Image: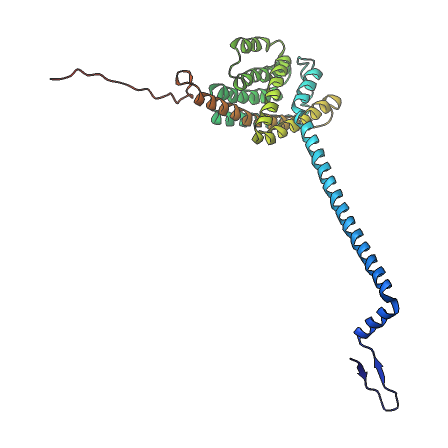
Length: 316
């Protein structure tokens, strides 16, 4: 087939070859060997392209695996933040309160510190309403006391301020004793009594021991129960950030509102303990359900039903 282009009479007729003719001419000029070489080159290019795509895909997969490993490592490190912060704060505080503190230099800062004591009260009220054990409810009530004592301390003046700070630390230590009682229901009563007796003399030491036990309990529970991993990581992150605020307040006491930030971080960390207490209560419930009837413990306010048999004399 040819394409005919009509031109004026004084111009000669030109015939253009068809595409098939062009390909045939190229094939005849190159020959079979040339065509084979071109095909081999094309196959080599395709192979290189496939190899490059596979290597690129493998590199993406390797980078994603490295990112996942890095994320797991970071989260694993953060999960120990609560334990690290507990030990560091106890060491830095020398295990006893020192002086009246330097966190209320003006009225604005004083009001902010009083206002940020309210989350402790809210956390305590929440725990008191939602906890099902007597020790859990007692811990909620103690957190209300912690918030009130914190507000009293930050609102105090003069000679009462040092005693207000001592009251603040005493209520925290006492609350930690009750927290341990709620987290470890089988702890001997003598241990709790010893903690209560030591509170007026070494409140930081008492808080340190109880907080360390709580952090270890939270870590173990989060490894066992995936639902607790999110709250535990939030708890640990808040503890680490709180440790930073704690250190910054000592290094730069002139910076404003650092103590208020510490209040918010620590109250958030305390609020996450409700998840841990709920898990402990669930474990108690399951243990009670699996134990013999004679050894089961009824929940507060829900005694086990009793079978009453009334015998009457037979009438003839």
